[in-house]
Image (cartoon, rainbow, N blue to C red; front, side):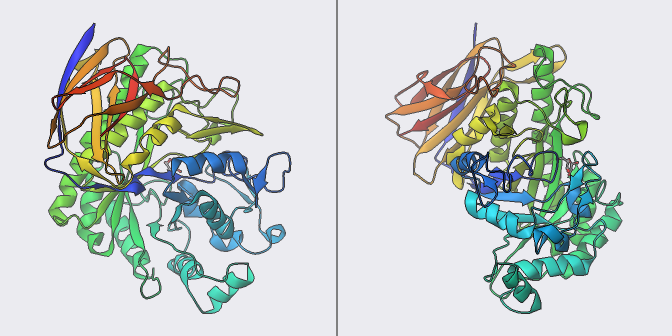
Length: 494
Ligand code: AHR
């Protein structure tokens, strides 16, 4: 019951760099994504450093998270940065109108965010408020963060940070077509240009300006943005969520699902390839040099919330299915690395397709976390084109390639290959030619489980975790890999 796949790794014609910012994480003021999941403040029952929980920070450091996008999402277009600086006791308590109507204490603001970055070792991607904030408010936030001198820099100093911070990426609002202001593309493009005009960083510094991009297959949005505002931008975003069982609103059960829902989800995730191809084609028209990159800064699965949780908190369990969603997308980004130089899975902790789940003092790493960990060598590696001829996997009306993969030459000089078998019933033997490579040893790890809906709980945290893999052989420049059903395999070739 083995389906064969043939492949060639083209080390003889290396491709673009797999930008490490593709591993950006997204942390929104949503549910327990920040409060509880990252920030525990003075709660001494949960070990923390300057308010951030040590267990979660340690796990994120182990992922080498390069960049964090904050404070939203929809939250960003109602966020007023001045409310989150200065003495905590004086900060206004607001209502989080987007996410559950709970109170937002503004305890985590700009200074706390940069403390989080310092602890994780990540860089800043801040999304500004276009929705109900002014260009002046946005420009002053950038000045407050980056200016070496002046009144705002002095205020920053009085609040505890004398030296300017580094702000390598800035988002001009979020989902301007929706929660960011329900704008038409033409209006959104004009507004984006207006706000972008006033975003200035000190001489010698650079800041990537990222415009709010399309929702899924809205190619017109990309067309209008590129045509009208492209010259003022460094990147344009794209948001696409994997939502099985008929799309919006999300209704699929995160854990109790059958093979049809498995196939539905993975087929929906493959659509990312088609979407990037389509948006990139539009971008090519206005920017053939590929100066402006596509930032897929929200992606991942979106299911019905876990039973008993606040539906506005978007809390969902994460199974082996999510692990394959992650690996398939990371492979798709490799194929499009010439245009996609950033992505951010939604979201980092406790929200949607999370890396980490917490409950009070407890913490667990999800199957998605393990894929991100296994793919760490892809960060800033060189993509090696991978031609795959693979059979179809189908269940009911859902049809997709059975095997997904990508290959890179890492910064460590080694070649790393990721292969995922989406078929939950049949193994798949991949016979791979190594063009331009001489390999003598192969080692690797595999992520799989007994069932398609296996997950890690606080009580059984190791149900889905990477194990050493012994199913690969190399001889005469031919690599043979037998992928177990429903598995993600990462190989190191030397
Ligand atoms: O990630 C959750 C929400 O999804 C974000 O706030 C918004 O940008 C998107 O619609």
